[in-house]
Amino acid sequence: MPYYHSKKFNVIKKLSFKKSTNADFSTTLKYRVAVYLNATGKDRFGNRAMLLKTTVMLSLYFIPLVIISFCSISQIWQLFVLFLISGFGMAGVGMGVMHDALHGTYSKNKSLNKWMGYTMNLIGASDEIWKLQHNVLHHSFTNIEEHDDDINAPFFLRFSPHAKKNRLHSYQHYYVWLFYGLSTISWITSKDFVRLNRYTKLGLVKSKSEYRRILFKIIFWKVFYFSYVLILPLLLTSFNAWLIIIAFLSMHFITGFCLSVVFQTAHVMPETSYPIPDGSGKLKDERLVHQLATTCNFAPRNKVFSWLIGGLNFQIEHHLFPHICHIHYKNLAPIVKQTTEEFGIPYHSYSSFFSALKSHAQMLRKLGSTSLQSTT
Image (cartoon, rainbow, N blue to C red; front, side, top):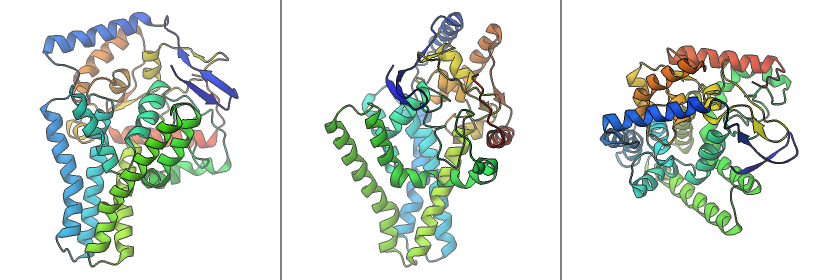
């Protein structure tokens, strides 16, 4: 397990999970999932269904951009509709294609995973920075303040009961939705550079040569991204530049909002825990139990919604088995739920996305109105 700097302890801490606690649960669950895969003749990777989804999402993303630049559209509403469609496609690529590829589950072919992972760069962000932020920090230390970057929010947002509170937070449940929509604007402009520097200081980027390689790669892909998404429409269409820029920002607002509400609703919830390590950097639960305590599912029976968001309504199954492609989660969910019930471990799930979103808003309000310092 890697080391991370913690302001709370003002030292470099190595966090670890208790291996003895609920060991029988983890062993049983892993065994049952393995039995299911063997009995059904399935492996843990994606199949042709992933190829169909990839085609649909990349088409939703790229075709409107091609039409904008090369098909001489003349109406302002056409410009905005096409950019907005592309925004939904971008979110679909992020949740249903890139996400699995960078977890290494899109295909058993490592080269295909690598190339599909580059779709992250095609939507304006860095695949390497994302893997550090998501695969390493978020999945390893879910809902642990100062370690999980998904809850390490800027000063005007508070996603953890252990984070410092200020007066602005009392209103965050009103304005957070705007910043959710702006999240990918930050990603394509500054966030990758900021995190590259931060992760270098944390020791996740091991050397100066690796730092330079990643930096060059970030710059190259961002230049390429802005060239075809923004510069081409500015050069090849007759629309005023300010209209194109507003339409471009609208596209990203759609993408940022979709991504943020799906990922944040899975963890910043009234039921989820925000564990803190003890003085020696140890957490009170075993790793899989920790993931169950800090994660929520939603809309498990909504097949269309699940398909559109890359199975991320089954966030519990994803956090328990990030090495398994999302197309299997709906079938793993009953196995996980049954096993948690047998061992008396909570399994947090909402029947619909809107009920989960409502609870997320309530949690944001609670975090903004209290200095709660729960350790559970």
